[in-house]
Length: 381
Image (cartoon, rainbow, N blue to C red):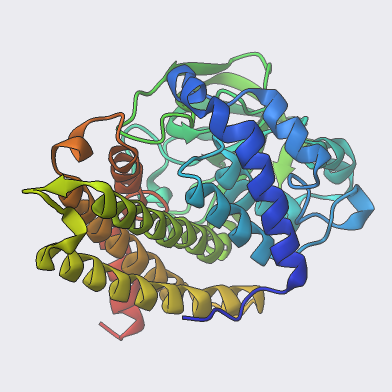
């Protein structure tokens, strides 16, 4: 179906990203997967192209571009069946907190580096004993003069090994009446005494995206590194969730589209019982059904993206988009791998990689079960 989201400037950006990926990402991607990370110079190169600062104001050297540029970037990486390490998390999850809540001094300290790609970021919310229940965090920060003393541990931190700035969710006060009160965002800088980047976690998919554990052993974080107001973090996190969840849905739909295209091509070339795989009715029907389901997901997603750009997307509708698009992705990847047969189960198969990468989209950014809970509350249940 014809999409109506993009203008000429978005399509020009699409071509630039496509050229960059073809020249500088795809030829090296296998090496990045083996290393478990993307070289830092890749992000500096993206900074030179204006990608790292595309959502930042011109005052800080940015492009001031809208969220549709983020969508194009995700669609093009999915089209090439690659991921550029923690780039999506940096742009769609972490950077919005700096853009919304950094004060004037923090902007002068950090924004030039964020724009150039010299500074990479991560966000540390999840702990070993907590998952989606952010109000249950055990990491604590005690005020001591003009510093917070931070102690705790975080896990599953995307981009943690590359990060120069890590936004850490910590409890700075206790309110027996409401666990959501008293949570604060602190920016921990790489190299602060007591801040340790732990072991890399070996994941099922997303092999080129570093994911690690972090520990904070009485790290003295200046009050000047507090992002926003003390005790207000839960509201900040909630306000950014629609964009985070839409970003996950964008990747899910784009990757599912790539999987279908791969499978159609494979079905044309693969011979079974002396005939092309694509000539069998089951293959045709499976791919036709997947195509129809994908177009439904794309239409729903594009409507959500349009509302997000207008700052009108509700948390419940963001949850609906993430739930439907990621569940669609899971079904599509499973059926595509089935059509690839035994080759689909071999890790060198591109569909195998997409299948492994897809599994996490129904988990991070809020599990499918959490999405259903949010949606059901919007129904008055």
